[in-house]
Amino acid sequence: MPTNTYAHTGRRPPWYARKMLKRGLPPAPYEIAYEPGLMVPAADGTPLPADHWFPLADGDFPTLLLRTPYGRGFPWAAMYGARFAEQGFHVVLQSCRGSGGSAGDFARWRNEPADGQAAVAWLRGQPWFIGVLGTVGASYLGYTQWALAVDPPPELRAMVVQVAPHDPYRTAWPGGVFALETALVAGVGLAWQSRGTSAFLRATLRLTRRLRKVTRTLPLIDAYVPAVGERTPVVEEPLTHPERDDPHWQGTGLGGAIDRLTVPTNLLGGWHDLCLDQTIEQYVRLRRAGCDASLLIGPWTHTSAFDQGWPHVYPESLAWLRAHLTGDRSGLRPTRVRVHVGGADEWRDLPDWPPPVGPGRHWYLHPDGRLDTGASTETAAPLSFRYDPSDPTPSRGGQVLNRDGGSRDNSALEARADVLLFTTEPLTEPVEILGPVSAELAVGTDTGYADIFARLCDVDVRGRSRNVCDGLVRLPAGATGPVAVTVAMSSTAYRFAVGHRIRLQISGGAHPRFNRNTGSGEPAATATRLVPTRISVHFPSALVLPVATDLPPVGEAG
Image 1 (cartoon, rainbow, N blue to C red):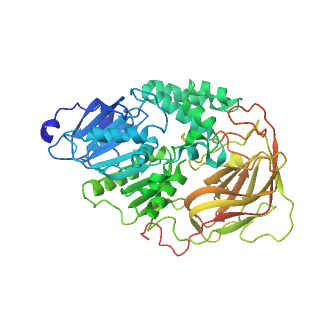
Image 2: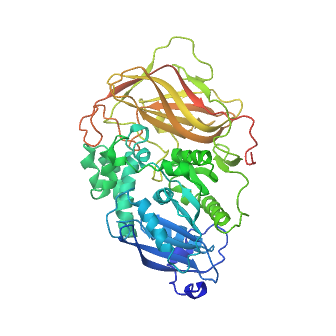
Image 3: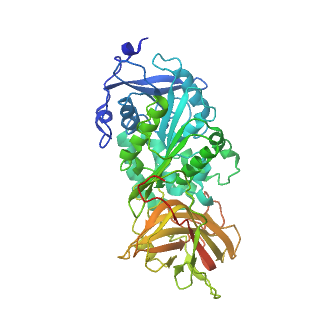
C-alpha cells in the first residue's frame, strides 16, 4: 500500500498528546494521526495491543519501537508517540504482556527478549515499515531495549536508553539492602497506571498517606499491602529473593548484551537517579566493546528528567535518532559526554567518562568532627552512635522515585543523634569533583547486624547542608569488627565553591528509601523483632573524592 494512501487513515490524537510536553521543544514539522489498539502477536501468539503514531505526510519515515508495562496513555502517548511522530517517525507504542490491556501474565523482566523480537517480526509485515528501526524509552522501556539487544535485529540502527537498568537485582537490592520505597512506588505504578488516570491518582495518594505506617510495620510481607492496595509480585518477588545467585534472578541481568552490542546507543541519566550507577556502567561497557555511545547526565531524579529535564532530554534523543536513522547529524553535540556540574549549575562537555582525574584524593575523618587531607597520627578512640530500628534514621532527598528526591536541605537529618558529621573548614579555593565518590571506613558494631549509609554534602556560607551523592552497604552478618568497608557513593560532577565546606554524613540507614536493618538477622520479608545496634567508626577512615585538575573550563568541550 503506498505510504501517502496509508498516512490519511488514522484518528486525530487525544488533546493531551497534541498539547502537552511541548514547551521548549523544537517546532513540529508534521501534523499527526494514530491508530490505537492494533494487535501484535507476542512470541507465543498472545495478542499485545499497540498504538501506531505517524506523520500525516507523503514519504518514507523510519520507525521507533517502544514496549511498556505502564499503559499507552498519558504521559507516554504525548512524550513519545506524538512528539516523535511530529518530527517524522512512525512510532509503535506496545503494551508488554499482561499489562495495559494485553493478554497473558506480566512476568516482570522475563518475556521481553522474545516478545521484542516478535514485535519486530510484525513490523516487517507493515506497508509503512522501510526496514529502518530505532528504540527509545525510559525506565522499564529502557530495559525492553536491552532485551531486544540480546539478539539485535538487522533493522535496528539506534537506541536511546533513558534512566534505565540492565540488572534488576541491583535496582531491588542496592548495597545488599532492599530498596523499600522504590519497590512500593513501582508496585503502585505497575498495578494501577494502566487502569486509568483516576485510579492511578487514588492509588498514589493512598501510598503517600500510608507510607510511614506500613514501612514501620512488621512483617513487611504483609504490611505493604494496604499501601499498594493489593498483593503484587512487583513487591513480593524481589523482597523474598534477597540473594544475587537466587534462581529467581537468573537471566534477568542483560550485561552480556551490552558487551556485544554494536548498535549506536545514546544513554541519558540523572545524578539523583536510582539507575545512575548502571547508566554509567552501560556507557563504560559499550565503549569498551567499541560501540558508538553517547552519555548525558543532568541534575535530575528518575522522574524529574521528564519534566524539568525534558527540554534537554528530548532534543538529545531526537538528534541521536535523526543522526543514525536518517543521516542528519546536524543536531549532535561535539563530544561523547555532557554532564551537569552541580554547585556551578553549568554544563561540561567531556571526551569520555570517567574523565582522567587520577587517583581519588583522601579526606580523613577526625574524632573531633574535622574532615581534612591530613591523616591523623594520634591513636583516637572510635566515635559511636545508637541505631534504633524502631526510630530509623530517615531518608532525605537522594535517589528515590518520588518528588522528594534530589538535593535537599539536610539540617533536620543532621540534628539527629544517630548521624555522625565530619566537615572541612571553609574552602579557600573551589574544589571540583568528577567521577565516583566513596568512603573507606573502619566500622564496628555490638550485635553484628548493621548497615552503613554515607552521604557527601555541600555546606554553604549560611550553614545549609545539601546532599550531593550517597550510598549504603550492609556489613557482613555477625561481624562485630572493626571491619574495613568501602561505601560506594555513586558518581557526580560537582563544584564546591570558595567559602563552602565539604561534609560527610555517616549513619545506620536511610528509611524508607532502604529497608531498615532490624538488627535481628531475620529475613527482610518476615522479620518481626527489632534490636538496636551500636555502631562505631574507627580511625583512620577517609572520604575519597575524584578531584578534577587540568580540565577545560565549565561549558567548553574537552
